[in-house]
Length: 554
Image (cartoon, rainbow, N blue to C red; front, side):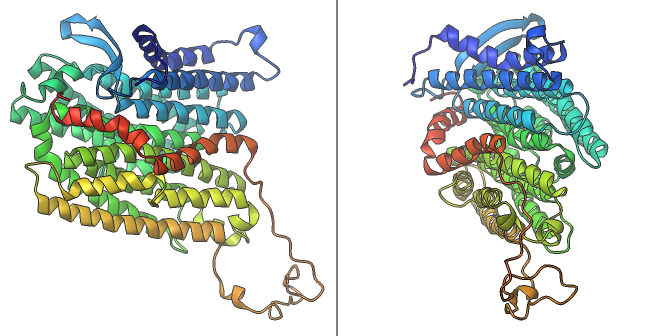
């Protein structure tokens, strides 16, 4: 069933446009603006250009989704297949199915919202032209990663996002941005070198880099030893980007230093490139190798879940001087651990849960980083002790709508039923209860129990954050009676309980602005929609996952 019947050639054009348009837009952003488009402020003109290009890409992606045949989500659609380097059999091969389409939509949406937010709140740094161009190159590389069906093209697209993200952190970031940017680029580049070796090994041993042909072959053309080496090499590169514990240490520094939109894109879409690679490449192309490493992948995943949660609890405690952005970054290590656990089960239930958790994490954590960036702008800091104590009244008293939205995002992140975060975690735990044939049930049920314990830790630190940031610190002073709080000479303003006195004014902050509401509302609405109607997403991914795990057979 298609919502609107769109011809195959138009679908091909739309997918090619989605991938190429941001790249052309990046080039155009660096060129002098035509006289009629300069306006009064050239900086605003280039920011408006960014909103226009990302908006056009989002509309094209939505039309692509509307024209997608939802009755056959396991079939590659909007495909383009052109020979590029005949000597190596490298082809410009594009296509989408039920696995890649949601990620394309998520990427296009988040990039547009970041461009819209930046139009009104550009981070401090060099030329806006360079900023817009880097965001558009980043979008093009990410969309290409989810759309290409050739292993070498996948690698090129995978690497294409590194340089723009490096400069976004290094030039527009906050404190320690240079060190964080170098750490990001070194970790990811070293992982990518190893990944390239694994990709070349598969291509040379099988005679093709075509991901569809390799998935259909389902590893039959590769010996078990080749599959094991390929999974190890490619898996390391993907695990760094995911990030999997213990290869995660670049992430907290990068998030803490990155500008708000950099953190949103890093958490919302870049981390998904790693887990997408596990599903699209390793599960169907090297199933025997994956089966060998699945228990180890699951073990690292659950360690990451618990480790990330414990790190967040340590940052959230009173007196720890924890940074709220850093805490959300560590929470991503835990959430992506659930995605990796679902993939490691090698079952339709687990992999569907992983894909659902991917999208949920992009929506919820993207919203959280937007909110934390806004809080940091208002308070001048993201230090939890300062937010909770020294500023007097907390968010509920100073900016109630901002506080309410932060509480909503935090509750969604901890996996409350009825919101998007719940389904992915639940399905991955169900998948771990009954893993694929050949995997140890006792081991995976142990991993399931550890993962379930991780959900309790997640709830603990998220509720602490809400209590401290939104409600403020609970002090013995607040338990005194109104008469006991009568001011002495040096006590400052009269309290609300003093006879005949007006209530003390709470210092107010700017609450949610119109442009912020425009950027954040879609994420909050989709978090609720995905939580209440998970069949929208699972109906797309499940047939594609079933076919993938069955070796290309529906």
